[in-house]
Length: 513
Image (cartoon, rainbow, N blue to C red):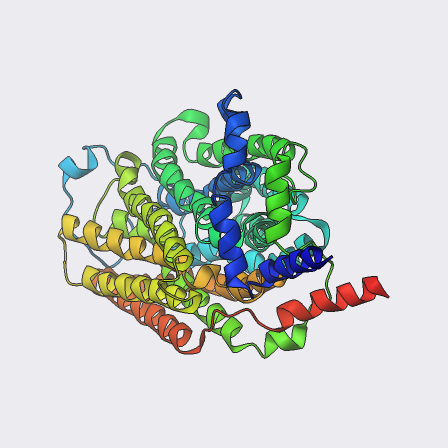
């Protein structure tokens, strides 16, 4: 009887991280990412049967984010080929001298869409009008009905709409904007719904490993999309630039078929989850409950708002670079994107490496109690915020040095990766039971820069494609990023919020009655 009581206390402690000794005891007894007891059995099984279920789910989330960013980024590359450049229209352009050796000697193909930078900025930003609208509802729906179908069906519909994009663009720019808004609406639930999934699958001491690696799919999506979209736009395959929408739309639809078979909302539903892994996860994670959301407590939570502000400022930098770098490379640095699309992908290769390594380091530091969770998150955020802002400012001082510009851009993007183990994963630290709701609110706010950033770039560069104009854009982005970093470091506290337990305790009391 006494041992059963201790067992219950230990489970409760694991749910809320109140008893760190118990958590350490389980971590020592069972290795974090594999199970000693399972090794003897798995020796005689095929390699794919030895994989832990949560790793399989993580892999398909990773591939889902690859598709998500394929559908988001393809227009940023394709719009260069779709539109008439300002230099052809004799508008004000002050760029670096072109070098045929850099571009492979092949001129960039352009279609006949006469859209000025303001119009292009609105087209690129239209995605985020829809993306902002559905963030919050996506998290709530995933908490109530599970991530599998919310995440999967959202990407499926977005993929189908992407297939319709060329027809819309050729009909009228207004139809293209409507399609992009709808794609944003259906991509919006992705991040909040996956936040719910992590709450059901990822143990506390793996929160800086599995989620950041899976989220690195968005960087892989950029790495794959930009060179491939450039090649497709330069080709005659399916009409040139339209193929960059057809190919990525079809890939997403194929991903959905596999997602239906391999993804499950939690270990209890997964038919191929080993019993020892299921037992471990159910013991270390909160049981899924349909809790009443403590809206007033969330609204008064200073740590939560510090996360929201920091994430919004970071996304401003990210979206400025994500949506506008292809234009900067083509217009100012005179890269031929069809032949040198890899140039745009280079920064995202490095950010993916930083995400993986920084996540591993963060969890090791926490596990060995070298730093508290609060300190780890703040250190990661400081490194990311200061590093990215510094190199953004330096871009404006390297002039037409293509090596210097590429180095600064690559490092600016790479340092953003530290945030994945800093402020961007902090929702799970303060309130894992409401991760979907918190991520939904945060991503709604963080999507606003996606609307603002392309418009700001378009307004500054309209009839003014100059090095000085882009220097202003990079300096502005650096200032926004530093502001978010400062707010987070002052106000964030990584301790679990009291209201994360209150709903759970009320549920237990109701069940007893």
